[in-house]
Length: 237
Image 1 (tube, helix red, strand yellow):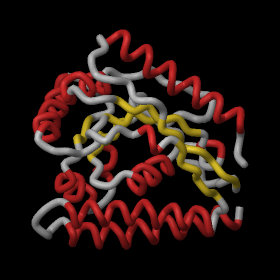
Image 2 (cartoon, helix red, strand yellow; image 1 turned 90 degrees about the horizontal axis):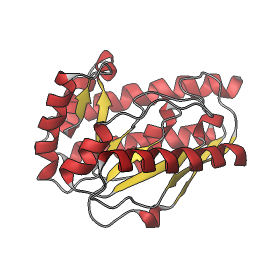
Image 3 (cartoon, one colour; image 1 turned 60 degrees about the vertical axis):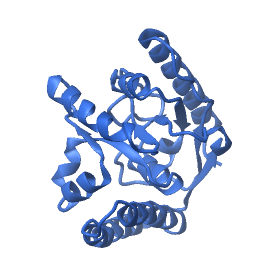
Image 4 (spheres, rainbow, N blue to C red; image 1 turned 90 degrees about the vertical axis):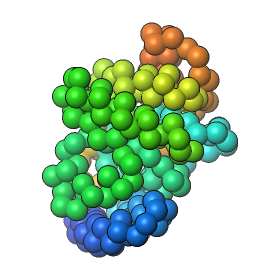
C-alpha cells in the first residue's frame, strides 16, 4: 500500500507537469512536438510504475505490426494500458471518450493531436464525429488506437464490442491489429492498489482488410478475448 500511495502521488505529479508542458507544445506549429511530448508522458508513467510500484510491462509481438498504418484494437483493463500504447507507438492517433474533457488543458491537447473524441453514449452524434475524424486520418500515415469495448474491463470481464472499430477498419481500408493484455492483474481498472510483477501487453496477428462486419467483429472479439484469458491465467511474473 505504501508503494501504491507513492505511485499515486507520482502519477498526478507527472500528469500535471506534462499537461502544462504539452499545452505549451500544442502552441508550436505542427503536430510532431506535441506527439513527442505525449510519448514521453507515457514513458515517464511506465518508469514510475516500475520503480515506485514495482509493475513492469513486457510488450510482445511488435514484429507483427504492419509497416503500413493500421487500426490498433486493444483490450482495456486499466489506465496503464494507455501509457503502454502511447509510449510504444510514435505518431499515434486514437479514439477517446469525452470523459477526458473533465481534466483541465486536455481539450486543447486532444484537438491538436487530431484525436476522435466520442460520447460514451454513442448515437448519431458520435457517428458524425467519427466521420470527421476519418476524413483527417485518410490523409495521414498514422496508426489509430481504439478500445472496442468502450469501457475498462477487469480481468475475466468482457463488455460488448462496439461497431466503431469496424467503421475504422472498413472505411480506412487498413489492417486491424488486435491487442491482448493481463495488465489488469497489476493495475485493475482505476484501482488505487497496485500489485508488483511483470504484466504483458501483446500485439496479435493483423486482420487483413476486406472482411464483412459480422465476420470481422466475431474474429476480433474471439482472438482478443482468447489471448487475454490465456495471459490472465499465465499471471504476473
